[in-house]
Each structure stands twice: as structure tokens, then as C-alpha cells.
Length: 157
Image 1 (cartoon, rainbow, N blue to C red):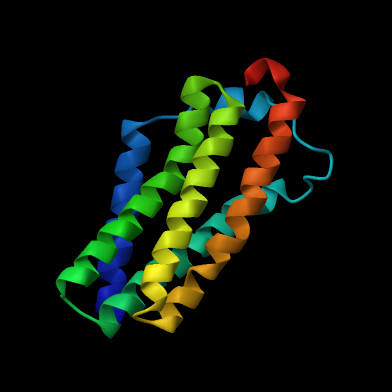
Image 2 (cartoon, rainbow, N blue to C red):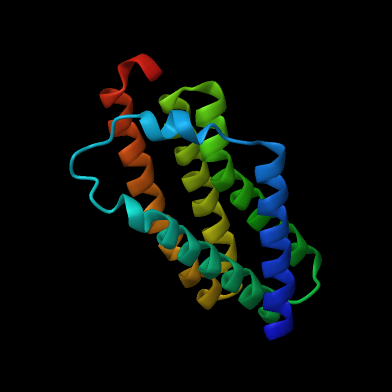
């Protein structure tokens, strides 16, 4: 399991690093946007995402251990990568377009893809399915925060 986890973790980290280099974001623009007053936990968000990615990597490793090297497992591994890139696309899509509403759509698409992945994974390993739950719980919260930001930043829609 450790070797599987390390291989999948390295692939996820490498893919995320490459994605961020290929699609840089305008964080200064993003940081100037107005946020809801109740968003008091913004400093915790990077740690929440780290936890979610660790759970996702562990989920993929558990799935691989449950059903190694089959064609369907390879397809599901590709689905994990698609969900990761959907998650990572949120900031570059929104900041490059300078459109907060694009962030809402990106977040919603990521949630839908995560939900589809979870239904497929759960059929093979309930542990792997449970490990995707933090993402399915957090994603609507992040998407809702972005949706509220659309109304707070009407010139950036």
C-alpha cells in the first residue's frame, strides 16, 4: 500500500505542479475581490484542500490495492486525474477570464465529476469511496462561497 500511495501521490503532485506551471493564475486580481463577511475561515482553506488531496490520493491507492491492474481500474485512475484537473482548473479559469461566475461553473463541474467518480469507486471499494467524501462535502461549500462572491463583485462577472 505504501508503494502504491507514493506512486499515486507523486503522479498527483507532479500533475498538479505541471498544471499550475502551464496555467498560471492572477492571484493579485483574485485577492482584490470582495468576500462575504462570514468567510472567517479563509486562512484554513489551503489546509482543507491539502487534506482533501491526501484523502483523494489515499482513495486511489485503496482502489488500486482492491483491484490492481485491470482495465476498469486504469479507467477509474484516469477519472481521478480528470477530477484533479477539474479541481485545479478553478483558479486559473476564473483568474484568466477575470470572471467569478466562471469559478462557480468550474466548481460545479468539479463536484459533478467527483460525484460520478465516487459512485464508480464505491462499487469496488467502500473505503476508497468514503475517502472521497471530504471533497464531496467541501466542494459545494467552496462553490457557494464563489457564488456569493459573484454578487459581491458585480463588475467581475
